Length: 202
Image 1: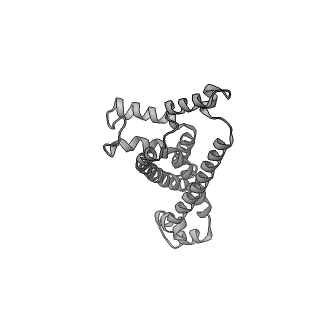
Image 2: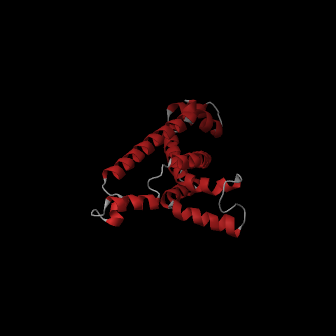
Image 3: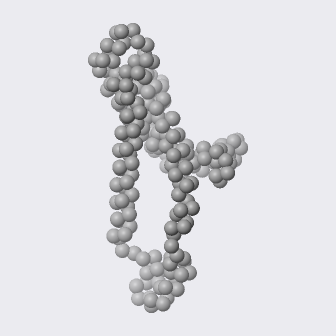
């Protein structure tokens, strides 16, 4: 299972890197300076420079980025951990209980996770758990509780995709000869799934 998750995470990182690179190139290839858009191409150079200074476009952003990187990495790690903790049991249970209520429930969650946008899910979680129930803070990094809702919001979509991948992989493996041999030798279904069917145990 560890090898399977690692391969999927590496694939996801490669895709993310490709998407980020493509977006970066598109942004810089598409013409359009915000100063030119606001003042027009016929504006004088002094007016353009004055507007850039007024908007702060002449200032370096390295310090601002450096201040945000720790929080970004913290949230990314928490979201990834949340996705893995949700996806592994859901994917395994959906594969083992194929066609049953567990399978339908897990795949229903997967569809919701992919379909619900983060910009809607985040405020809904804040309304429920922060404002109505008072379990978590609305915002801030002062405590671990403040990281729970953002991690769930960002990790839910990846958890949905990962759960479907785990289910599909296990369904293929559970029909293999060595898995049937393990069952014939008297291993419990739990040991068959966790020790024999998971990619890291083959």
